[in-house]
Length: 116
Image 1 (cartoon, rainbow, N blue to C red):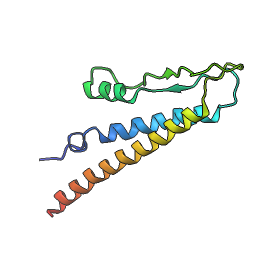
Image 2 (cartoon, one colour; image 1 turned 90 degrees about the vertical axis):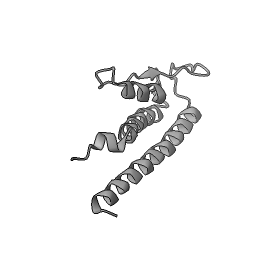
Image 3 (cartoon, rainbow, N blue to C red; image 1 turned 180 degrees about the vertical axis):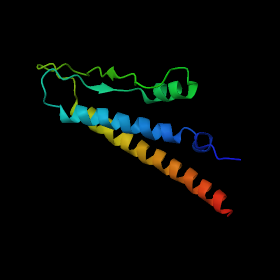
Image 4 (cartoon, rainbow, N blue to C red; image 1 turned 45 degrees about the horizontal axis):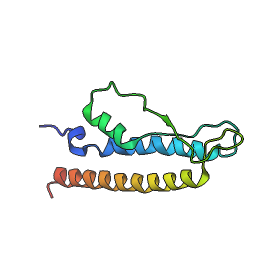
């Protein structure tokens, strides 16, 4: 009887990958805070995880959305530095949490394999 890593690890591996993709989007927003006409982008983590769990989609591309600014800027840039920094910090903490859960699952599998 083999071990199914997909069943054993649950959604934690997918959550980790999704958090990484979100970090890339948020860091691009932060890098372009002073770029005229740059449109801030983000994903809805909960809906993307639901889409993964439903497995109804063919996977692949994320549903990236443009962030609606609280206040329009004169140069057309929609990046609000404080919002992006807060979202990045929250995503980083959530990434660490997902990593911790995944590590715990892997340690449990290791102990089961070793017979402990």
